[in-house]
Amino acid sequence: MSARALETFLARLYTDPVARREFLDDPRVTAARAGLEPGEVESLAAIDRVGLELAARSFERKRAARAPRRSAWWRRLLARVQGAKP
Image (cartoon, rainbow, N blue to C red; front, side, top):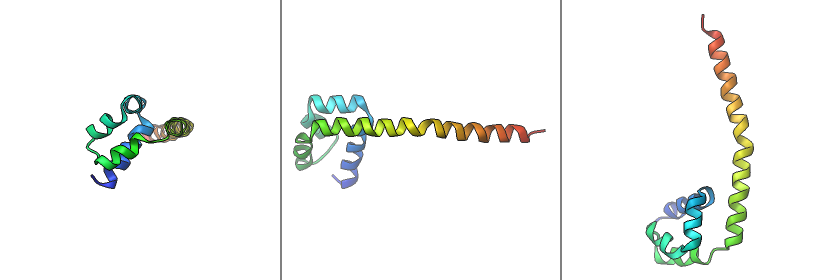
């Protein structure tokens, strides 16, 4: 499997709580089911579980902090477009 597949799997673990819970319940089966190579499966089975959870929470807080700015930007743009209509 490519490095991209491993990175995609890790990104999903960091961003998807259901996927992370499934992985933490049975890391080898979950990683193998994702099509990762045996060496990758074993490496992931040894992952720092506390670190994984901490990183996932940190990423979630960062996404949540950015979300209001994005929606505010879209609201301003929409207001400009609507105001420009005759």
